[in-house]
Length: 223
Image (cartoon, rainbow, N blue to C red; front, side, top):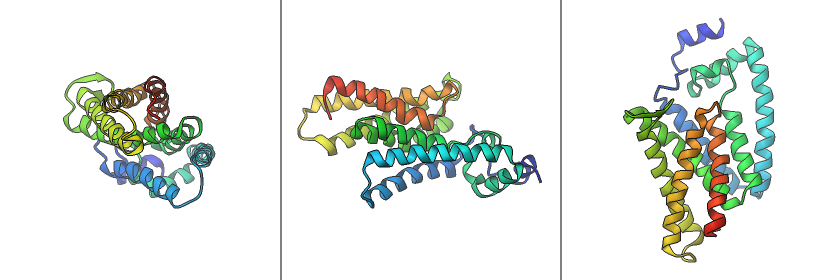
C-alpha cells in the first residue's frame, strides 16, 4: 500500500480549499495546550522559546526521514492523516513551522508582544481561513480573499485590545489602546497574507507579527 492508495481509501487528507475543521480545532487546541502547559511549569518564556526551536529542528529532521521513507510516511499518515492536508503527504507538514515560528517569537522578541503574536497565530489564522472559505467572494491574492482578510483584521484587533487591556490598563490612555489595537489588526492581517510567497503562515504570523508589533510599540510605548 503506497501513499496514493492511502489517500484513495481515506478521505481525511483534505485540500487547502476544504474547510477541514478538525485541523483548525487541532491548530487552536495545540496552541491553548501550550499556554496551559506553560502555566503549569516553572519555565520562563525564553526557555519555552528555545525548547520549541529545538523541537522544530528535531521535527524537521523527522520530516526529512518521513518523506524519504514510504513505510514511515504511511505510519504517520495513518495516525495524523485527519489533521494533515493532502499536499503534506509529500512535503513538510505545518507542525515544525508552527513550533519554529512560536519559538522564534518567544526567544527574540519582547515577551508581551511575542505572546500577542502567538495569540494571532492560534485564533486569527483559523478564523480568517474559515471566513475566507465560507464567505470569500473577492480574491485579492492566491488563496486570500477580502472577506478572510477582514475577519483576520477584526480578530487580531480584538485580541490586541483585550490582551493589552488586561496587561497594562489603566496605565495607558484609551486613545493609545484603540490605536494600538487597530494597528495590531493590520499587522496580524498582513502577516497572514505574507504566507502566499511560499512561506508557511504558521511561521510568518508569529514572527512577522512580532516584528510589526515591536515597531508600533517603539512609537506608542505600550509595553
